[in-house]
Length: 186
Image 1 (spheres, rainbow, N blue to C red):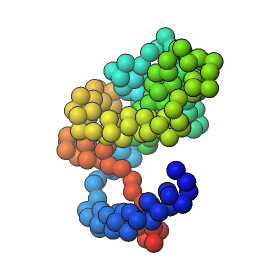
Image 2 (cartoon, rainbow, N blue to C red):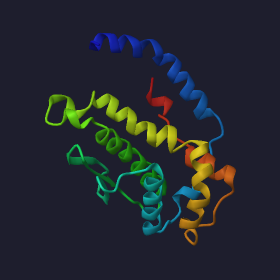
Image 3 (cartoon, rainbow, N blue to C red):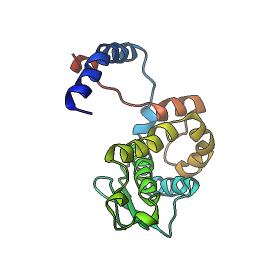
Image 4 (cartoon, rainbow, N blue to C red):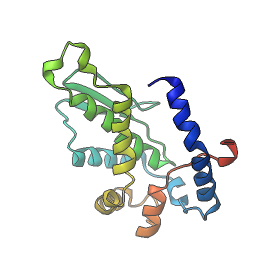
C-alpha cells in the first residue's frame, strides 16, 4: 500500500474519529484514582509472573526482567527475553507492559523452526508483530473476562497496598484506556 492510499483512508475516517473522541471526552470519566496509589513493587512483579504463567509463557525458552523501557529481544527462535517496568504508583503500567511484551515474545516463539536462518524467520511484518502484542495488552488484558479471572488473584497480591475497590469500580478503572485530547486532533 502506498502512502497516498493510507492517507486517503485516514483522511476519510478522521472526522468520525474526532467526533467519537469528543463524545467520549464529554462523558463522565471513570474513576481510576485507586490506580495511582502506592503498590508494593514486588507484589506487582509477582502479579505479572502469575499472569505470564496463566498465559502459558514458556520459561524454558524465555525470561522476564526489569528495564527502564519495556522491550522484547531474543538470541534465536527458541529464546525470548521480555522486560517490563514497575512504577510504585502506576501499577497498570507494569501490568499492561508485561502483557504487551508477552505478545511480542509469543509471536517470536511461534516462528516455525524450519524457517530458522532464513529471511522468513523474523515473522510476517512488524505490523503483525505489534498487532499481536496489542491484542494481548488491550483485547485480553483489558477485557472483563480477564479481570473476572484475575481480580481475586490480584486482591491477594495487592493486600495491604491499598483498599480494594468494588468490582465494578475496579474493572472500569483497570479497563480504562487513555484517549487522545480531541482539541489536539483538529
